[in-house]
Amino acid sequence: MAICSLCLTAAVLVPDLITQVHLTVTLFRDFIEDNRISMEVYADGLSQSLRAHLPERCQVHEYRPHVPVWLGQGTWRMRLSRFGVYPWQAHRQQRQVNHIIDHGYGHLLYTLDPGSTVVTVHDLIPLVRWRGGIPGLAPGRKPWLNLISFNALRRARHLIADSENTRRDLIRLCNCAPDKISVIPLGIDPIFKPCSAADKLRIRSALGLSQSQTFLVLMMGSQIYKNQLGALRAFIHLRAIYPGSLQLLKTGMPNSEWSRAVEQLGLTENVRCLGVVPRAQLPDLYNAADCLLSPSWYEGFGWPPLEAMACGIPVVSSNAGALPEVIGNAGLMCDP
Image (cartoon, one colour):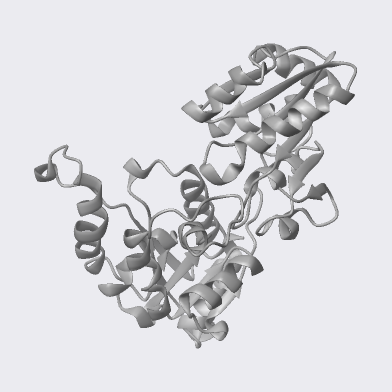
């Protein structure tokens, strides 16, 4: 994934790369306060691969924005930092190639040189939802701040989309030129791999999970588009036809809607929220489970099904957004 991104970036921005001795690249990262784990994983993988595979050809700089102390702790602190401070900071960090790793910071294109800038676009979910493109979710309010970033994407020299689905969204919703978009699916970290049956029991014990006689269904995330109530309905149906013991595990912090539904449906003893699981523990969690349930209303890509399959556990998923691209014929899919 990271190497493909580099090759595309270099080919688009520096056509004479073959004769170029050094190429300087700045990766523009998110604020650490954003706590967007997937963006950290993407940026880390890209940075490490550039340094590992082109050490003599490519000089990589990473820029992490910082929140000024003088902004204090007010409600608007992060908004002012994202849309005011970061563009000012970024302007002074430009190199031959600028790579914005998160489309949510597309507004940096107003201060960076657009002709030297590539943006990776992972999804346009706020815009898709507002335009009524996610049937299971109400459109909601107009995403004004997101639109500031999304409307700037047309300025970039080139865009990288995680999926064909996101590429179509860019063309349809942002009027981006098709020939300026390349699809590069995300890669998979080698930490995700199957374990033995004995290790599975050991992992379950270490994580405080039920032993082998209980069938564990895993669901990842708490975002609104994850279709949490659909997961509970599917679990109730499975419980009605499955004779053995069942438990539904969910990562992410439970919201009031989830907690209320679990209680009303009488699933308190069958559902367990694990909270935020450190990335280093995710391979063990996948291997401890018997099945991944991914009923999302929409996904711009969807790492969890890919990670689960890499760990050797079956996936039952919706067929929404980019999920058919990720899963192909290797899982079971249906309408969310």
